[in-house]
Image (tube, rainbow, N blue to C red; front, side, top):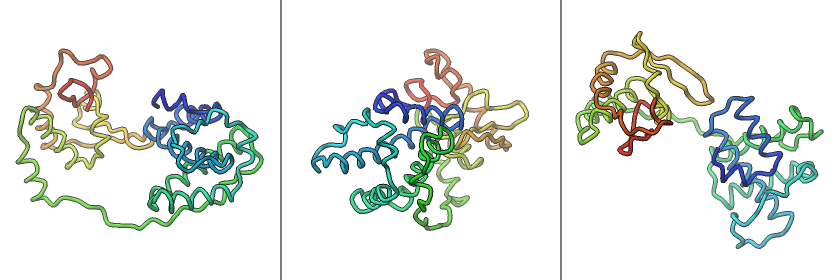
Length: 241
């Protein structure tokens, strides 16, 4: 998580975010999302409790003085008012509000069930907004081939390889960016670390193997920062994509 964000956390929130990362094994990106959701909630709470001016920028609302008595004072009504604010004032979609609901339930469950700092969980009965289920969007075979055929430029081998893995292995963009050289295995499989740090192993078909064999000889070796030495895909600046 970003240092400047951690510096904005009151001690109990710092402990919770560390718990998410170390005990629950959540990814840095997931921890960051939880922090941002909770920061928005507690800024709302301070606006309500202190009756701060509406035109006061969020960045000026410090959370460092939030303590256990403050957390114990949070009620279900406070949370419902916040969710109404998220919908009507911030125009949050159902999906965004569902994520905020998850963040709040997780935080207050941590305080009641893990640290036992609270005796009652004000978010226990908080329901998530219903999400509209839609069919996944995908490219046809013709569209996929057309996309691969137009790859060109200085980093054509890299971009072609990235697209081939995306299309053939069904990877997310973040998963492709997180791939390491050591994730490519001698038995023609690929180790992928997905959401929630869940690991899976995928078979590399002939197209993927050929794309990797064409790209790897062009991958920079010199001038790569130590932290990115193992990154499979590198940017123009020789850093992880």
